[in-house]
Picture 1 (cartoon, helix red, strand yellow):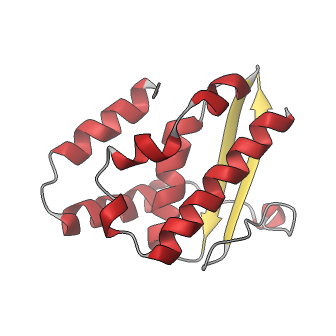
Picture 2: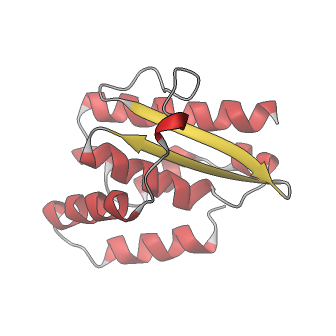
Length: 135
């Protein structure tokens, strides 16, 4: 159910045999994101359940979800970038149909994320799903 951009990302990760290379690639993805405006870093956009500070701001344009995010942790910023690639441009119905855990598992990250990072990733996915369901 993943979009073309996420499929490209999966292919990129398949070339990275080593966990360290994948970890660096996740961080690079986060660094490449545009910064979230300070005005959007408010309690309403803050994601609970993450060990680090995380903000997700979603909006609908032409019936499609687009979200931006930020974190004070480099690896979490990278995870936000991966989720943006997975979800941006999908309709709310498509967002709800995506099995994000299965899609993210295709990147080979699950066994290397700490329990706190895994919980934070689940919290971010849940926030995105809740946003899509409300639209």
